[in-house]
Image (tube, rainbow, N blue to C red):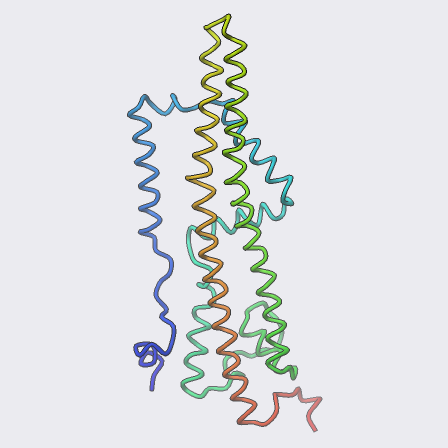
Length: 262
């Protein structure tokens, strides 16, 4: 019985490559097509309005900073950047494979890592806690707490993007109202109507574009990645549980430090 044999028979989760560069390139291709379409309508400069951009982008940024602290915004930007290059399970895929192999080949958990100290690598930290005499239930509490903290940050990033997707069109509508007021005030001077009308229309366009083409897609991508993150770490804890329960069944009691042994 081998790990690959069990995977073929569907006993183990498939380790298919979750990050698909072709999908990202296709998405960027759609944006390029949109830009080319705008260019054919009269050139990109036609769709650039500094006042409208300032209202929508500046207003969205101010609103988000008011709702979320600065560190959350920075963390969210970092997560967004990482999501463009890999899925969050990449860091533990090798660990999951090692755990699968250990389960099938009857390898002890203590043989997978030294566990001499906490270094942030999940499996090493699990071995360290096991060497300290903790039961699986206690180890599970510690690891789950760490996962929950990370997941909370990831959820905050999604919420930030969802809020931004709501705020941007609202500011676009706000700019439209301001522009229409300017139009009404310029009726006696038709030469000024164009600038006010441009503000009215471009703020709506910018708000809709930011919401539909940037914030909403990024929020959906991060939400999908959050599901992968939880699933991968749930698998890790389940496999560690199998190894620890087998240790306790075969060796009677959990590993104890030398100083605590009789």
